[in-house]
Image: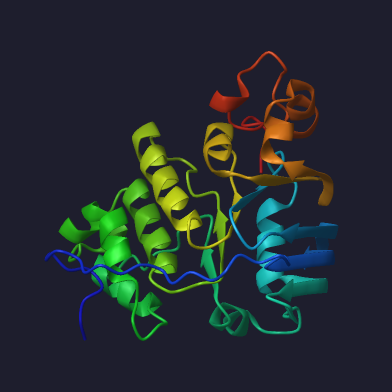
Length: 267
């Protein structure tokens, strides 16, 4: 089997694109999620357009990750989840993924005892994976293709996690806090990789760094207490210090483009 990471010059290939949609690629209605009997998502409704980046925001611990996990069926849920025009809330997670939903989890979840190449090979779902795209976005992984993933830095593991999702031709990416705990340099690299991916596939992004949100997001959905409290254009929120303070816990005097949301509040 050909390795997902190669050293020779990549062929000209890219993620296959679809025509712009007028209908949302993802529609969530009255979504509830529970973990060990505790309500963590409460009556959440929002849409994700068929293009661009939609950011899911909120203070720490308000249910952003739980919302993503509820959409995928990774936790107990009720409500309606419609993907590409079809209900998927009664499907198991692997069936949702097979329909073209890529998932980049919050804590990377690489296979520590497997090499970079093996991690990527296990993620391949398509007959013709987008290897050239992955190699172009993450050249450092080419050099480390034989290295055990557990010995990589946090930033390098995040690159592996993103690369696994980008190998396949997805119709939607769910990306959960991709810059969490990374150095400013790696944050920039991850942001640029997501920007390149967003040119070809819509993304629902959970992110705390408002500078990253300003760079990537077209629309925002803000959660508080497990509920949606704001939806709209990203600029409408980011350019309004009062709204940022109210919903994200950032004081109005702070620069919203250089701030992480409510970092002192425990998750």
